[in-house]
Length: 270
Image (cartoon, rainbow, N blue to C red):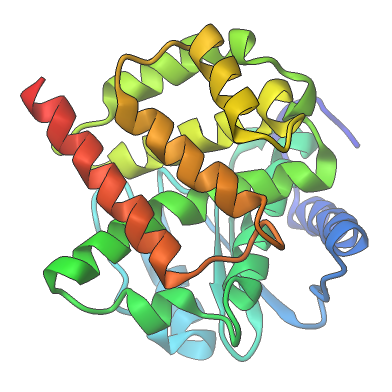
């Protein structure tokens, strides 16, 4: 795999995607392939046009996403879709190494895998995240935090990049992300998701089945002053160690959402 950053041809990108699919299938016994996945390429300049055509032809339920928001396509490298087929929308103008594309594809395939397998029958978002009530807001928050974290955790389970990185080495990044969590930051849930992923795939936490040991390692290396962070980490850790790590329940997502919102409230006042 060529790790020199450069703008890849579409043929090169598809080859990297194929390698990511094969690696994912080998580890998690999934069935994704170029036969059951539709692909489209975009750049920020033609993103709206490509997105609308891609969704109208293959994923009409996604036509109503907020894809016309400022910076939507500038901030996206790829996006995953699930319908009658799977789908991946890929940005083609990035000066990246092959490995960077490979990791992004593992993340997007993880989204597809989790959507299909996270609950019996799949599709947690479609079943529970379409309302607008108070409880629905909690569910939406919990699922938004979870879905990005588990995609990173699942991708790492395939290639095991992070398992040898210690919490000490991740500390500065984690603290910086924690400082960015705020009700006024539209990327706050994403920051929380990355913190969860970093904690769970660190060598200390990934290397134990015992939450007390994991919590001690986090406290010794990160030393958050906010107990809600430890509560979120505990909720996620115990779910990851309860059956297949990618599976969820409604109660788990509600618990995660409530605790995340409590974290936001606590940070706002203190």
